[in-house]
Image 1 (tube, rainbow, N blue to C red):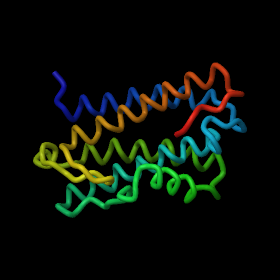
Image 2: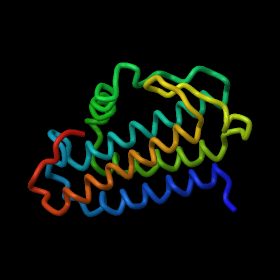
Image 3: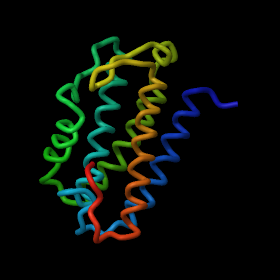
Length: 161
């Protein structure tokens, strides 16, 4: 039987594999969301991977979790995309892959006693590590649904990110 950590890692892996399969099919020059092509799309996801790693590492060290999204989710999304705008698509794809691997490794390295302790999320609010990670499993799953729908008609921009 899998423990909670292993189950979460498996869920993260499955969600990201499903998303990556669609990312690999996506045309590069078309907008998915307003002003977001596949590059901005994966830059956005990489930004959240960075926030997960920062939060889990701070939690492991008994330090306050950086409030990277305290100004709001939309602001953080725009910031993570704009800070990567000078990267080319190949670099963004490498970050997309590497960021996910860092999330998995950081979750694996998290001390057992920290797993059930509450932490403050980067946008405020709090919960357990399991609560925190499940949010990002759902995040990848949501983006997978959006991307799957968009790929059926890539000339149509989806609403908002």
